[in-house]
Image (cartoon, rainbow, N blue to C red; front, side):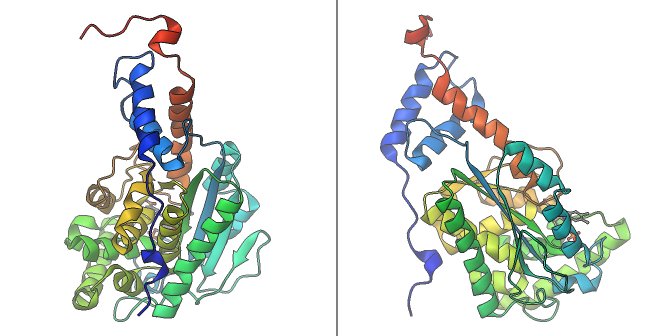
Length: 351
Ligand SMILES: O=C(O)c1ccc[n+]([C@@H]2O[C@H](COP(=O)([O-])O)[C@@H](O)[C@H]2O)c1
Ligand SMILES: Cc1cc2nc[nH]c2cc1C
């Protein structure tokens, strides 16, 4: 059997640039370590981007949308039609990510992998129709292997466009009613942890709704657990088209030497899939925030991730990642533009 594309090697870190960036940080006019994790971010970006001066001026955002069969089980506070309606809102410029992309001056690419309810083609949206949404994963698999494969490729192709555009950072976002159930089932299987510790309100369930959602996901996880032998199979069984596209994008970004900023709960579940499919992808992933969904914290822990922000966000759409970009840009500029002790004639530490 041939090796699948996602197991192909990723670009290695530049150890020389890493050492150079660490040495520069030590010379900048501040007590060592006083810019906290921003120092680490700048050093990491220098070694990933293989340059002396890390730069995040060109940001690329792809938002992947798709429907989830599990939504028919009543696991979301919103009807499934909202996936397509919000896609239209993204395209018209009225969604949170539309505003944030404008704020950053970043291109916003919109990709519809498959909706349950047909909509008229939207200007500026790539409609791919891999399936009419996934199948419910309560009793069967969400996707066929061919559908999961196709969705992974969609992410890979988005990264190719980002690279061609000269992007310095890739941000993926998602939209899909029911996808917190998918993220929860993925987390339960990949972390081997009880659903009750991971499940959350998603778009805003009542306490009663949360109990129902938890029971549905528990039943689904019990059904799939004996067969979820690897990350691809787990993704195929309980993931989603947009989750697979994100996972494919993260792997492809690492293979193309393009750093990634991961968004919220669903994106982080996709990140864990990507890392389980190719462990070297891990070092290419930066994390924007810790969100409100209980499972997000456990996924971040497993990924050894220290996100930049903790704002109780639970929107998705790439919004949390977009919000963290100015902080990363500031980290780069501080690294590149601060004077050294020698340049500014400031005395160094006595100890
Ligand atoms: O990214 C997150 O952390 C996040 C947390 C909760 C909800 N969401 C968004 O809400 C939708 C899924 O929620 P639900 O309740 O339908 O499963 C989907 O479109 C996500 O983008 C996103
Ligand atoms: C309105 C709305 C906007 C969203 N954006 C991402 N997920 C969403 C879910 C809903 C319901």
